[in-house]
Image 1 (cartoon, helix red, strand yellow):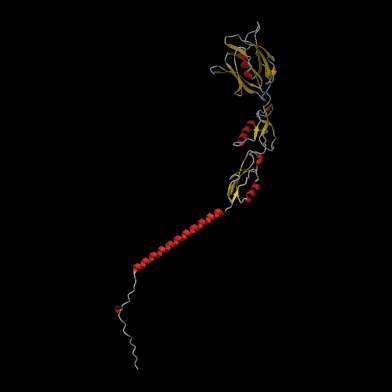
Image 2 (image 1 turned 180 degrees about the vertical axis):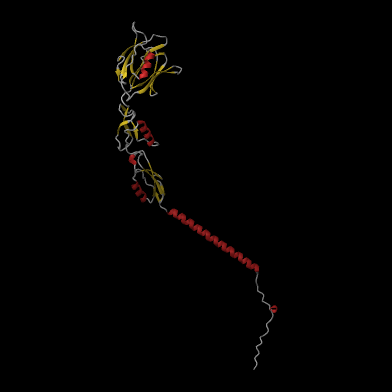
Length: 359
């Protein structure tokens, strides 16, 4: 039996007709735009919700912090202050500084915010702790120059109340140590400074000066005797009286101790003058003033001031204090001014007829 394996004849592709689909491209485009718009709106809404949630959480966290009152920490020890802050759930920010009072060391001297302020729990409170004074013990100044010690103390307490100062006047004594060397001090070195303290010093005047020889002043005029006194820093007590018939006017007629005597530099020499010849509108006399006793001789000056303001020096001498005298012959109306270390010592004295010479 013969089998027939012929396949049926297939149609050509050109003869095939596909069914028409009902597709509208404009509707598909419109559908894509709506879909994207919906996604954008949804994404925006999610972002807004996240921002709102974050802001709400932040606000709630702020409002959730408990409010508390800042305690008064001043004058407390640091450890005690830290406990107080911990009780209030506050945290310290500590700084240190020097203060004037050495007893404040380790204590709170300032704080911010101030006591009584209402703050959130967890706030940092700035506290300032005293380191005490710059110097809490007296240094050893023995052997130092007194002028260098003064400069050192000024620099040490610059910008702060000085807790240690040198008491004036200082005690000066003759000593083999160089002049201005500090020999003794009180309080002693290493003494605790509990507050403002004055340092009492004994200072060397240098080796004792040799005795001086009293010059022969007899017969010298008033101007010449003043030159001699100033030249050798003679401590003189002047007096004036009318001249006798046998005496010259306006000169030295007596002195004690006698010329040629050896005396200590601070010993006084009594000098007697006779009044100069009288002149119209001119006054002669002795100026005198009681001064404090100085620990060592200070520069003392006597000047005359004219009504027009002109200044004329009469006598400049290193004087130990006590009674100071000086003769003058000046026109009436002039003024005598006494100065110690170039600082005028009031009151001034006006020269006039009949004036005693003691202001």
